[in-house]
Amino acid sequence: MAHHAETFILRPNSALGHRQFIALVALLGTASAIAGAAFAAMGAWPVPLFSGVTAASAIVALWRSMAASREYEIVTIDEARLVWISLKPAQAARRLEFARCFVRVSLELDRRRDLVGRLLLQSSGRSHEIARFLGGEERLAFAAALRAALEGSRQIGSRQ
Image (cartoon, rainbow, N blue to C red; front, top):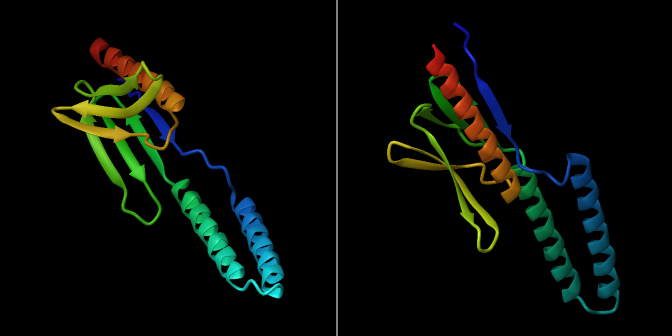
């Protein structure tokens, strides 16, 4: 008896690598320091303060974005179940398990405005959103791949 499992690993898109982050922080810090020094020399002492706060806020936002880009989700479908695991830095892993034969993939669509909404796994009266960090087109493609994998798994299971 052959056991077949299909695994999907979902990761958010990340615009910055670690080196790019360091380079951008250095650039923001340098630009802020130069602008602040120039304005302070002209007697406009509040400008360096606001310039520093602005640069620090941008750096914190970039840092949070980089931290969020390290999260990922794993979806595994085998003959009996679908397992979803969410891994985020500094948090305990979350795991949900669904009976393969009862799980349904649901994708919210707003055809009038051409928008792709939430991607949900639904079973036994419970519903769970997955792949939040993917863009609309990526959620659409993943929903199709997930449905195909579930159909393939169901067919394999029914042949035995």
